[in-house]
Length: 522
Image 1: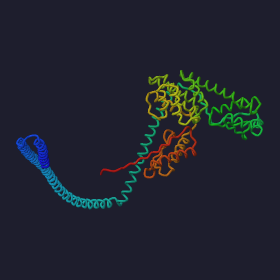
Image 2: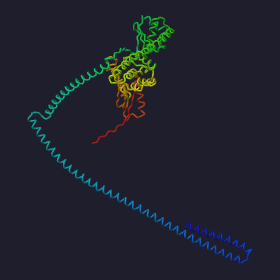
Image 3: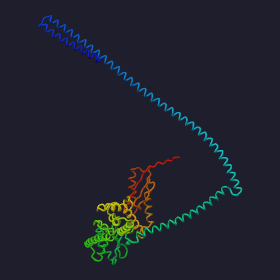
Image 4: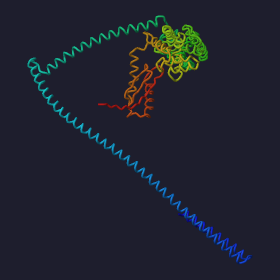
């Protein structure tokens, strides 16, 4: 309606403007033309203006009708859409009501069935109670008759029966266990001897038991005073130059050298023996002899490494690896010389590889290098396994050799037959009688001490010493130990182990925290 009014108003305004213009024209024309002409023109103008106004009114009326028609069509369209949506919702509600009614009917049927089952169960229980009462009466009657016949009460008869059966079961169990143990022992001993003898029969190596001390014999006790020197300057110089502790006690004609590093201890031993032979013992002479001893020990190390390569038939090792092999001549593990152990493992690996059809050359190489990390494990952080792996990778050893070194204690999964062979050879060399001085009792006590230390902490549920005491796994109670507490607990356990235990290498402390929910289906 507003648009029509605007159109009409525009037409009116247009007409008025035209009329004004025409009037002005007529006014100006009236000056120069005659009045008749002016009147004629004015009449024509008025007639034209009326036509324009009539046309504008007709146009406005047409627009109005069109607008009304469009509005009616839109209203009808909205009405139809609303009716359609209403019908759809009504149909959906009817379907929903139908489903609800069906479910209600199904539930009613199930409820009726449950009631019938419950009634049947109640009847069955009542019948069962009656039957049970009758059985009890019959049983009691039979017991009374048996007591009269046997002359014993039911308790006495039961006790006698249990005792007889228990003795028979114990006897049979003991016989069975004894037979099984004897059979298992015979088979285990036979197989173990076969395996060990087959691998070792062609391998012989000398084994020297060494410790963390060396003893130097003196020609007489007066030499002790000369070794100490004025105000102890000689012994201090020797200890400073070599890093070894000299123990001069009441032991006659002997000096004890104590050091964890076997190479330094050997340098000190050679230097001291040279000084004793020379007889001139003073700080300058001590420094000179220590330098000579270091060169001599370095030569011994290289010769030992080359001799090990020659004995095992392994060639092409990096010179630094050869030197590290030689250093293992002065390293022991539980009394077993590390270099002799590596040579033996190399030879055993070659024998086993030959039996299995594997690469003998590669097996010997992996066996010789499997404990290479022990040569410097007292100088660097980490286990001898991780140090050995780093050394082999550094000097470009074969990936199979690296994996064998990494897997020989089960730290990672073996990726080749060679790795499994080295594992077996290492176990044979270390486990054979006389190879190592640590007894079973000492070993089990060390594992027990590890577990006792871990169990002594609050919140620890259980602990297990694994991998021959190289790792202790601690299970904690999740309600008492949080994730943050685990970090401190691992540190505290490690510190406690360091302060209370003596052990080679390092011990890994693993803290495990897990929550378990258990339920039972009944």
